[in-house]
Amino acid sequence: MRDIVLNVNGKTRHARIEERTLLVSLLRDTLGLTGTHVGCDTSQCGACVVSIEGETVKSCSVLAATLPDGTAISTIESLATSDALHPMQQAFSECHALQCGYCTPGLVITAIDIVRKNPEGLTPDLIRKELKGNICRCTGYLNIIQAIMRGAAAMGVPTLAAEGEAQ
Amino acid sequence: MNEFQIIRPAALSDAVAAFNDAEEAMYLSGGMTLIPSMKARLAAPQLLIDLSGLPEMQGISDSGLSLRIGAMTRWAEILRSDVVAGAIPELARLVGQIADRHVRNRGTIGGSIANNDPAADCPAAVLGLGATLITDRREIAADDFYLGLFTTALEEDEILVAIDFPKPQAAAYAKHPHPASGYAVAGVMVARMAQGWRVAVTGAGADGAFRLTELEAALQSGPVEAALEKIDVSAIQVLNEPAFPADFRRQLILWLARESLGRLAV
Image (cartoon, chains in turn blue, brown):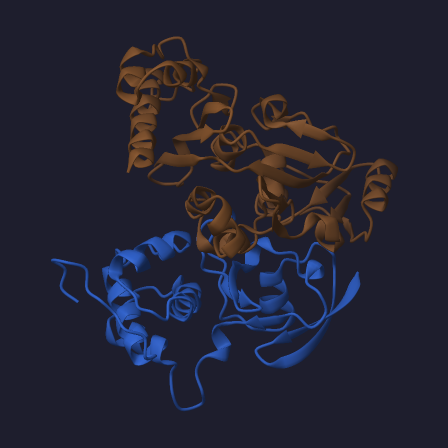
């Protein structure tokens, strides 16, 4: 067992954990933040994506005990305020970018990071490439790509439809 | 996962000593292969030695003739490094094709090289550029490093500390990704070095990454198009799978070599 202290969604959180505790287990089971999902057992699906110090990671493949004290973690719970969704969440809703919703927490965290890392602008092609680590079995991705384009615009980042493609 | 302990040594010698003292220890770098393997109980170490506290394994520097990358450098750091972009831009381009953004944010170059997955991209760069693998006890030439699938010249307790990539005059990598996994069905790096041509193939070899010496020799002695026409790949030992039969893979290697050589000419 070891004691760790992390900054989760802006709050200092202490926990006593086993060395083998995965970050996703810490978030869900110890801290009760069940918005982050576990969609597979093989580190492939991306449902568990959270942000560590501003970089997206699969929280099912990180040992919580290896994170330095004070590491900043952001999860899906950090996005909406009590009366408003984050613009990216709003865009996912408006574009019907989910069906069962299981992959959505990881996709929304990823989508926001794609926008932040590409302030010069987004194209559907770039979004497709960047979504390689997030699997959705319901939508076929088209609505997700539309939602990220719309969410990016709402976040103030320009979007360019690829040639011959409706935006 | 089974229970285990984690330590984070601050000196290479402490890490090696801990490895040798433990019943069953493994070194942990980015964990992008090891942690999924442990979840699947394909690996069950009793001690994990976290290498993230060792300063000599960090950092990227350009010595003029070569580019040195610390083994604990994450793929994402290589991708956004101005030093890499200035020294060997094709290396950054190759790294951009590895796995996905989340894995690149966590996975390290040294962990991947030491694991030696035969379908990984990086062996093509290590072998294609003739890198030197710097460990806690010696330097290993790329040509002596790869010994077969998931097997390298590293001793059991040896730690890969840094990789030294000589700068090519020109280099290009072309890859055919598996449509589901994104791993290389085949990937070919061609490099024109000061000492001559090097061509390395990953993903396809029955024993892991290898140099395509037939093409190197042909490029040495004549123009590119003639070299591609004249080499015989029928004897190359490649992986044979229903989806990607041996003959298909051999043709793919030639096709990718042509693609990379075409990019060099631009």
